[in-house]
Amino acid sequence: MAKRPELKADERKFSYAKYYDLEMTPIPKEKLEILERGPIDPSKALKIQDRNDIFKPGYLDCEIGYCVMEDGTGFLANLTRMPGVTVDMFEWWFAWHALEDLRYRIWDPEDHFYARNQNREKALDSSLPMRERTWGCTHEVLEDVGGGPGVILIDFKYPREMGFDESKIGTEYCGTMMCGNGRGKNPGEGPAAVMMHMVREVEDGIELRSRFWIGYHIVDGKEVKLVPDGVSVPLEVVKGLFAHNLKEFTHLAAILPKVYAEEKDRF
Image 1: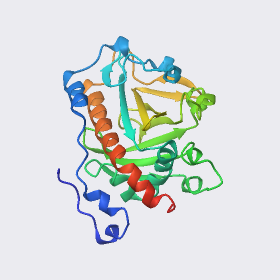
Image 2: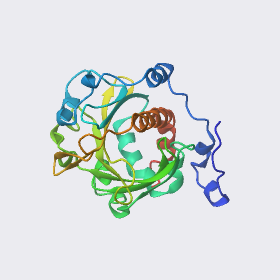
Image 3: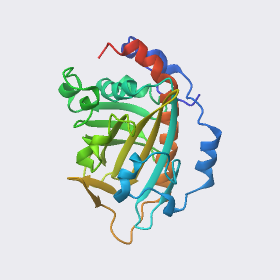
Image 4: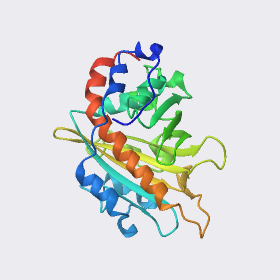
């Protein structure tokens, strides 16, 4: 087990503190091989302009991999199988985990330090569908995605605001989606990115299809390239985020059914 900060006495009182002590779930060997093999051919990546292709039946050319695109932006994709997890569990997790620091830390005790929803009232509004208790909220997180701990603001949006076909959500094409823009806390800090987590129901649970486009934001449904022409996102930045995504979602898949069963009624 990698070194992680010790919990304080007031943190140990939480019923879910026991999950902080678990060893991280090993990343599947085949994914580690993809990580170490190196970047994919950018022609196989899902271009941000084609992001609605994620709703097509079946799978796209790249479901797991990373690269720097020809325009200098970064791309990564990951597909996580989550046996025993439901759409309801996934939506609940995103609304629940950013309401207390330790909830985010149990997701990845080695790399997550806190997540704080800046719109707590919305997250706690039981009149809203669970997915909408995250859509429209900003989470401030402190985590290490490969370059040391840093603060990131994640502006979760309604999918239509990100240029996705929201009518597909809640259908056979897509059980749910979490998407938004990531940015540094202060202007010029950290790489900006578009994030998308799309869930599909499968026979034994769900599959999570994640995509990140580093060096882009989506504003009013339109993609805005933030990387100047002639400049590229460093490959190690893309690889670091890819490795972190493999790690955190492998572990979440393992713990979420138990955490949900124990905590679903305690917001």
